[in-house]
Length: 548
Ligand code: NOJ
Image (tube, rainbow, N blue to C red; front, side):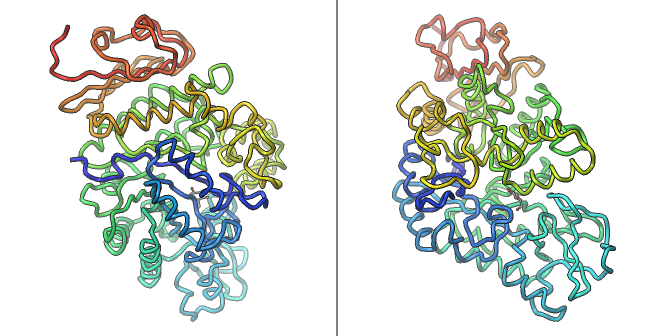
């Protein structure tokens, strides 16, 4: 049943701006990534998801593409990209590219043409509505604030943009647009791309007259055509970013017949610590029982009829150890617990750069933040009269720059990220938290991730085992089993700093401890009946063995 390489793989996400600078301009680049491939090979990952590196004015750090078939010069050249493909391949690592198909940059040649006149052949590549200045077609708002409509006086028309003004939406209703995109994808496949992550893919089939952005009526029709015309011609990993995915849609996205993608990023768990019906900035404590319920629902509902992506982090999300762990007293224990909890589940795990070191959130002055979303939100909320302290608390908790501070390689200047001036400040804790220290220390978070990746290769049950949640109502413990024909795994995670009694004593007495985030050298520790703060254990047993 498990036949695809990506079902057994672990993916590592690189945000190129912040990973490794090789030329001293303060911005990470492709040659920097090549220099660090051995580090990734040592970690044991199978593929890299590379956030966008195509030509872009960088209004949204590369998610505003002005040429899909050129590399942005701050990152390098097409030759560098091909060298990256080759060097990665030598280490058995595939490169998953980030496809931004919902919108382009306003500096893309298509949009520059489109703006020239209504009769220009590219005009219909974008979404336009007639109107009058100051009276947009409706009150739709962009994700980064402000109206979703931008006035172009020369044409007496508005164009539609779900993200920034510099990210006009493509018109997927136009078959010519779709064909152009497919040809571009086929071109990258020929160059050696091992797969694609599809940016906000559930927003392509919009209908602004009906105020529909997510899950438009023709969405799955478009996706099936896209897949048929491109991905199905190769052996690729494809993953759609779909904030609007529910179980039913996810079964379509990740249908095992390959008609759409390999898998989907769904975000139901990610929204749990925000107030109902409000924005991500409106914080509330994590409802732990709900987290268990939701993650478990996704595990069981896609079993044998879809495929999950497992992630806590990406370039849009705060650092998980600061978010749902404890980045102070139990930094190491909680980072490892969260890792074990996720990597024990079924699906393809994604590690976001620095997560394997337990990198943490930051608290900067407002002027030190670079992200367009943070800046716009700060301005808007201050104008609306919010208390600045609350606004800053939201940024500390949820701002995207938490994930975008430079990778912490060592304790030298700028954490070894650059010889120049980093484009965004380095997290001041880099002297304690860095790759160099952790690679030397076999008890580190880095080595814990390494073991988890290895376990996935050694234990098939981690890949194909059926998931079952235990103790759904326990207020401290997240426990579950994974089971296939031959083996059974038991995962027990203490999610907080309380010290609850170890449950399930019958279950685990005859199991072997595979991994623990505390020192478990002695039998007394392996089967200790009280869980220590954030303690996480994974046990295994061969089935059908007679009990001793
Ligand atoms: C989702 C990406 O992950 C995010 O970084 C970006 O700002 C938006 N899509 C727009 O492309």
